[in-house]
Structure formats: structure tokens, C-alpha cells
Amino acid sequence: MTEKDLSIPVFQTFYVSKENSMSPLLVELIRFGKKLKDYSLTKENKISLSISFGKRLLINSENADVLNLFSEDIVEVVDYDPIKKIVLAMGKFEPCIDTPVHWIVQNAREDIHAIVQFSSKKQIKNFPCTDSEKSVGTLDLAKEILKTLRTSKCINIKNYGLIFVGFNYKEIEENIAKYFKRVNK
Image (tube, rainbow, N blue to C red; front, side, top):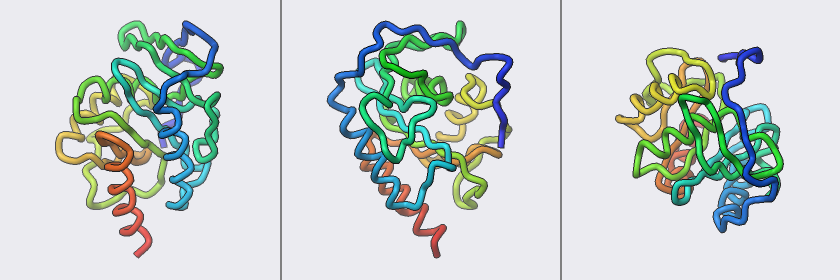
């Protein structure tokens, strides 16, 4: 697993508002987080969920229990500058460390509006894998993921975990169900 270097922040967050997001997609994000319990995922898996709408992104906050989300656990990302490493956000808490990667992936691909990413010691044989290990939450990791997503919407992130992407959570859930079916055989 890649450890994050705490001496250099991955990004800095500026808040346009400390109010909770009012996006109608909050309900979908919260529901999907609870649904992940059905697949035996636990807090130890370090899960990140996001969904985009327009030019914005909803993502869980850094220390949120994704399997038991509340509206205040969700951060609305208004904008992200990968060069300056600045997140412009709405919410009460710091967005999760995977925010830059989710933002870049969802803005680079028109067919991706939802992402589930989690740490896992198991790499899935049938899933493509990023070529090299990159630091969590970085532009370099986003590039590696985008390159590997050319062949599949379910990929291994080298020495870190798995990422499932889709147009919506229904598509992702179908792929997660296949993955867990394989793992539990």
C-alpha cells in the first residue's frame, strides 16, 4: 500500500460555504454507501465514493464512514486546479484524499459520472492494473488510472486497491457484484 506523505499536502481546500450540499444526488450517494455493506466491505477498506453533476462533484469527506453516510459527510467540490492543487468546496469537512483523482477522471471521460474506489490487499487477476505505483490523490495517479481505464471500467491500482467507474451507480453495482461473486467462489 502506498503511504501518504503528510509533510506535503496533496491539495489545499478553500470553502465557498460551510453549508451542506443541497444536490439531489446526495440521496443516491448515501444509499450506495449503505449498499456496499451487502458486499462485505468494511471501514478498513478505505472507501471513496463520488458522483458528478454538471461541472461539480459530490465526494465523501476524509474521515467519513462511507457505509453509514449522512449529508454532512458529503463535500461538494465546485472546482479543482491540478496545477495549483487547490480544491474549491462546499461542506463542513475536508474532502477525502482521492478527490483530485476522482475529479480528473470524471472530467476527462464523458462516460464516467460515478466512482467507487477502495483499498484492498487482493489484486484481481482478470482486471487490468496500473503500470506503476503512484502517490495517492495525485495527478500522476489520475493519469495512470485514465490510461488503464481505456480497457476496462474495473481496474486494480498497483499496490493500493481497486477502482470501479461507470455512468451511474447501477452500472458500478453490476460490476461490483461480478467481482464479489468471483472472490467468494
